[in-house]
Each structure stands twice: as structure tokens, then as C-alpha cells.
Image (cartoon, rainbow, N blue to C red; front, side, top):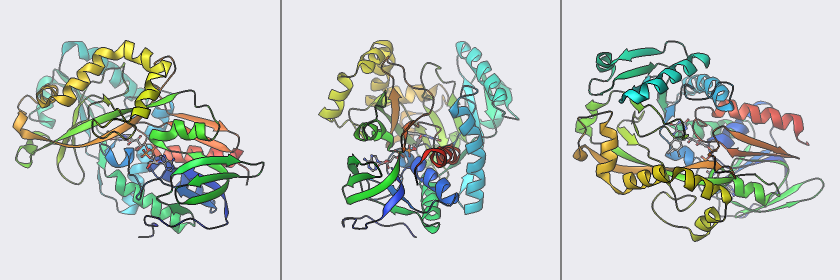
Length: 412
Ligand SMILES: Cc1cc2nc3c(=O)[nH]c(=O)nc-3n(C[C@H](O)[C@H](O)[C@H](O)COP(=O)(O)OP(=O)(O)OC[C@H]3O[C@@H](n4cnc5c(N)ncnc54)[C@H](O)[C@@H]3O)c2cc1C
């Protein structure tokens, strides 16, 4: 294992790196991998925690998304489709366990059928081949315990462990001459005409250019660097339950509801995991802290929401959905009821609470939840401001796009 371990010592090197990447999640690492792949060796990845993929990347559902959900022509659609192909190839070439198992999107109410029709059309426009529409009785051939009025089988979807993928990216970066520093949270920024000085919790780093891939802190890091992000990150916690081993036969692969098009979240679903086991979730509860994996509260973070106009616009528009999610977070019975729409035989005692992840969701000043990826260029900087799902699937493609921006605009 080449990765540098937790660093308590101060960084003393006098090197001025060509590029510093803030954030050792899958997007920062994929960007570093793309840059080293293009011959860029003077590069450092700065990660606040003592390990890679410690936040969104290490707490996600582990799904390789197909690209069916995203608006044709959007960055999500383009990067998910090309990133998915690249992800399967990367896993096959690097010995990372994955399965291209396919999934079902299931309409359980008559009013969901038009939205399922639209998804099917969108999938075709986004180039998905082999989508199969299933009648109620045909659903059982794929998922014997699932109830639905109609469903769509998406053969391109798969499962993988994104921590394993991130570690493999890290090894490739280091083998190619890049540097990874853990325990190095960027806390201050200074600029001169020829370089940036980043003060980190492990000492100073000098660089000529920087790329911000700080996930849940991307807006704060942009501001720290003197750039107005024009949005605020709002953390949405996604809580999971797991199905007890003796009842896992209820789910063969992945079973999803038809998503509500008003929200960028997919609705609670069932996911078989590549390492074994079946997860149910995640919901989407407003977290009271940026890294709020529980109901823990940060007064500073909450104060920041309350003083942001976008938060009140969003709260006014979506309060009903918000309270529904809080109810499902606090009540296991309510969570299980949502799951039973897809799997009527599931009982409360079949599931137990497992982990949670926190999504970094960008919120516009008018209260709109930003749907697409958002990448902002500034002199000698790139800021990745919104990289929610499917950014793990799409990471190789996003990394290549950012590397191309850097090669065009950065000073070396
Ligand atoms: C519950 C959940 C389920 C999901 N499911 C899927 C899925 O199945 N498939 C999929 O494709 N996508 C999924 N996603 C989305 C996907 O996980 C994210 O889009 C992706 O991980 C984003 O990667 P990132 O590198 O931008 O962010 P992160 O993984 O959060 O990485 C950002 C890193 O920056 C570091 N950092 C922050 N501030 C600083 C600082 N000041 N200095 C140094 N370092 C800093 C953090 O410690 C962190 O490690 C899911 C996300 C969640 C939360």
C-alpha cells in the first residue's frame, strides 16, 4: 500500500506544487489520477481526514448508475454514461469487485406510470440499450417478492465498493509521482502574483494552481479562496437500514421506486451490496451539521442556513416533504411502510438500522436544489461546487473534464 498514513507531523517541504487538489474523495482523486495520467507529476491531494473517501464517497449506496435519470444534454447525463463505461473498465482492469447486475424501477401507483414512461424515453435518448418494460406479472421473473403495476428493467446498472475504487485511484496517483497528504485540512488561503499558500492542519503547502473538490465544504473552501460560489451547500442525511440475513432472499438485486421529479433524490430503495448484504434506504433528511451522520447539531452550520435566503425559499416550497422525511427518520414504522410499497412482505423485524451518509446538495439563492454538476473556473482555480449522485459513477469522466480545464487554463 503506497498511501501516506495519517500525518500528525508538519509538512516541511519547500516544494511549490503546480497543482494542489483539496479533498481526497472520489472526485478529487479521479481528477488527480487524470492529471497524473496526462504527465502532471507536481501535484498534491490534501485530505482533511486520516483516510481517503471518508465522507460522501465512503458512505454511499455503491451503485454504478446507468444514466437513465438525467436530463439529456446535462453534465450528469454525459458524465454518468461515459463514466459508467469507464468505471466498469477500471474495475475489470484493476481487480476491483463489481457486478453489472441491472435494476428495476417500479411504479406502484397508477399516477407514477407517466413518470416511468418519461424515464424510459429519457433512457433511450441517453443511449441506454436493452431497457425492458415489464407488466405487473413479469416483475416477479426479476424480483419475485416485489409488487408493482409496471416496471422498467435497466440492464446497465451495477454495484461496486467506492472506497476500494478510491484507494485504487490513490495508488495510481502515487505510482505516477503524485503526492497524497492526509490529516491536512486547508484552513487558510493566501495569494501572491505567482503562487498560493494553503495553511493546513499539517503545515503550509505552496502551489501555483488549485482545484477545490471539498464536497460538503466546497462552498466554504471557495469563499476561503476569495471566490463567491453563488450557492450554499445544504447537507442532506441519507439513513440506511439493512435486511437481516435470513430475509435477504426478498431482494435479488436493486429495486427502486419511480423518483419524484421535483427532488434530486431517488426515494428509498433496496440495494444488494457487492460485499454482501442488502441495504434499504437512503431517505433524505436535512442534517443539522455538515457532517451530520446523526441528529447532532452545529449551531454555526444551522445559523448559516437560517441567514441564507435560499434556505427559506426551499423550506417554504418543500416543508411538507421535509416533515415527511423527518418522520421517516424518527419512526422505523414509517420507514418500513415506505419500503413495503415495493416489498409488501417486508416486516419491521426484518430490518435494523445501519449507517448513514450525508449528501452535499447545492442550494441556489432562489431556493432551487441545483440539479446538475456545477464546476466554476476562476483564475488559476477550479471549484467543484455541486457533485452529488451520480458523481461516484461519473468520477473518471468528471476527472478527465477537470484535467482538461486545468491543462487549458492553469499556470505551470
Ligand atoms: C447517502 C449517499 C448515497 C449515494 N449513492 C451513490 C451511488 O450509489 N452512486 C453514485 O454514483 N453516487 C452516489 N452518491 C453520491 C457520491 O457519493 C458523491 O457524489 C461523491 O462521493 C462525491 O465525491 P466528492 O469527492 O465530491 O466528495 P467527498 O467524498 O465528500 O470528498 C470530499 C473530501 O474533501 C475533504 N475536505 C473537505 N474540506 C476539506 C478541507 N478544507 N481541506 C482538505 N480536505 C477537505 C473531506 O474530508 C472529503 O474527504 C451518494 C451519496 C450519498 C451521500
